[in-house]
Length: 194
Image (tube, rainbow, N blue to C red; front, top):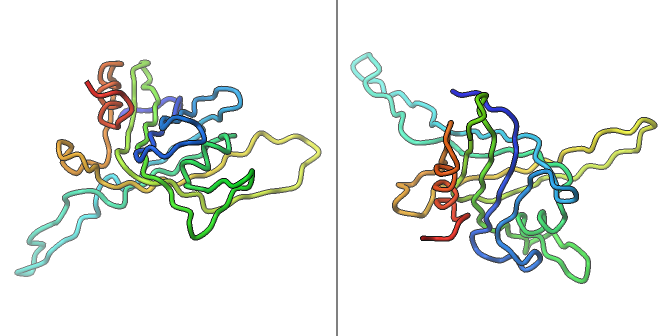
């Protein structure tokens, strides 16, 4: 496994096209002032738990194919409310954000970009899934100013519905160039076809 240096950028593609608040279905968090920054990403469930079948007093077969429950836990700083409302499916009505029975997060693909120790590209994309955020937290202001707190988002992945990807959940570029990164972006529907 190659070491990863940093977490440069998160790109989110809303797959159902419902993004009237921003006028785009491609959302980027990369440390631009007022537009949020990335802090951490942890991807889990990349392999299934082996299941052993015993027979004739031995382990006769071990099921080991596929993935587990593929998820990404993301810590983001100061993301705009519009971004959060879109990826979580929150409803806006006359300046009020409504969260309730009608809240439904849209399907999104995501791309997380980092780099290798020799300054090559490391990128990991999840083809289809939904965001969730289970809590908001507030605390009293301290005499000494704290750094900005990160907000935690969970992304629950599903297999791609593109038949050419053979039910893949994840695409990775390790030590590649912009050419490979753009190929991955195209598979994630983040670049125009062609």
